[in-house]
Structures are given as C-alpha cells and as structure tokens.
Length: 372
Image (cartoon, rainbow, N blue to C red; front, side, top):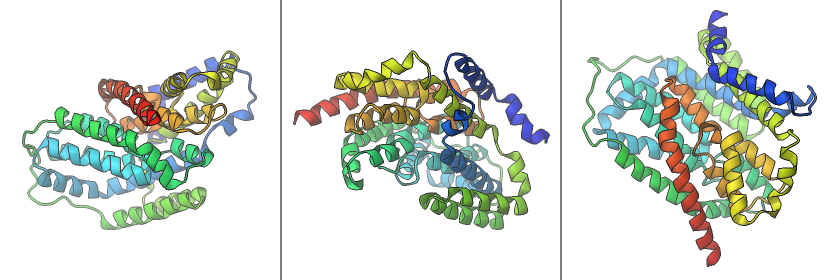
C-alpha cells in the first residue's frame, strides 16, 4: 500500500492541479455530475495500458540489451542523438506521439548504464521530435484525429496540407540536434564483460500484449484490451503493477477537470464568441496561445466550436505543442518518465525558442502558400 501511495504523496504537480481546480470551482458554474464527463476517458485508458506494457518491457531487461547495442553501433553522441530524434519523429507519425515516447524514453534511460550521455537533453529532443513528426498525419496525435474527422480532407489530403510545416520543423530540429550534441566519441562507462541478461518470457508477453492493445485501440475495444493487460500482469507480474507511476493518470484526470472548469468561467464565454470574427493572424495566435495554457488537444476541442477545421487551425494547434510544458500532453509524459526535477526547466530552454521559430516559419509558409 505504501508503494502505491508514495507517488501521490510526493507529486507536486498533482497537488498544484488540485489546488487550481478548487480555485476555479469557486468561480465556474458546474454540477458534480459534469466532472466525470469532462475527463477524456479513452485517453486515460490508453495511458494506463501503455504504462503497464512499457514497464513490462522495461522490467524484462531488454532495453538494457538494446541500449548497449546502440552505444556500440553509434560511436558519437551526435550520431546517436540524430538516430533517436529521427526515430521519434517517424514513430510518432504512425503510432501517435505518446506511444512513440513510451517506446523511446525508457530505452534512452537505459543508455546511462553504458555511457556518460546527456540523457535529459536526449529526452527533451525526443519530446520535441514527436511534436514535430506527429503533426504530419491524421493519426499522429489526438488533435489531428479531431481535425481530420471534422474536416473534409481525406487521409492523403490531410498529409499534403501538413507536409510543408512538418518538413521544415523536422529538418530544423535535426539541424538543432546536430548543433546541440557533441561529435566526440561515446565513452563507455560499463564494466560488464558479457551482454546483460534479460527475461525473455516477460518480454514476449509484454510485446504480444502491446500489439493486442494497439489493435484494440484501433477497433474501439480499448477497455477490453486494458482489462486483458491488467489481468495478465496481475497473474504473471504483480510487482510491476505496484511499482507504476499511477499518479500520472491522476495528473491527466485533473488536467481535464481543470480545463473544463476554466472553459466554464463566465469571463471566458464572451471571448470565445469573438474568435470567429478575428482575422487569420489573430486566429493563428489565439489557437497557439490557448494551447500553451490548456494544451493543444483541449484547445482544439474548444476552438472547433467556433472555427472550421482548416489548415490554419491545424497548423496553429500543432505548433502550440512547443513552448510551455502544458502545450502538449506528450511533453508531460516524456518529462515525467525522466524522473529528474532538473529536466522540467531545461526543457523550456529548447522548447520556447522552438515555439518562436515554428510560429514565424508557420505563418510565413501559410502566407506563401495562399499567395500562390
């Protein structure tokens, strides 16, 4: 019981969100019955399943094997960083940004066992990479799924409208990666003379359930998929369930509740009515700025009530994933998995300038395309 409660007692972000929710509740009209409905439960179910399965693969020890091979394969920090950033961007286009992070961040954390690498910086760049890569496809992130379903563009047409921004941002991030990481050879710090041991049964069970769970998500059977995962781990690896960061789910639940209460504030309602009357530049800044405060998925849901699912809105909310930590839920996932307090402020040293660059280049591309 102590193991389960410890994350909740020490999670300062969760405590802050609870206090914020209590403060908003004093001014926002709502009923208690509305609060459970405000939570995006499919997202919570998805996160829960991915948390369990990723910890299963991590506990199997296979990430140690793979991490050792990566250090031996890529001889410099720069090459390794370019590989991980490229992998994060590509995976996020087909597996969504959060799934890509659940695969790569635990793998990255194992690299510290074999070399003196800037692990925090690698994780930060992976978070930036999934934000840049996932904007390309309709299934890359939740906000694109919403925009794709509300808009009239087909799958290929959606990719075509996002391609210019995705190409420039991913290229810019790879250039920044080349500058930010040293060309020095990776110095091994491991004293292991033989390859690390790993638990094959746990890996195969976790990997098999991973594929089944992703399939269940695709066919809208996520709850049944989660139930299967939970039962198997309860029978075969109960300690993994006890050691999970369950407070992360509570953080996401409170974020949804706080966003709901924020949107119910009387002062905010008239402002939303004026959004559709803003010029294109105003809508662009509004969507990006709102994403910085309440995250780009809730911002998309909120703005789709006033704006069409246009290229401008799609670009703006995806750009809003950069910048401040709340801009994208993927940022929170990556930094939480790092388990290092220093990474929270270091993230903004790269993410905020990336937001400024994305805003400028996005607007320039938009004007250029519509001027043709």
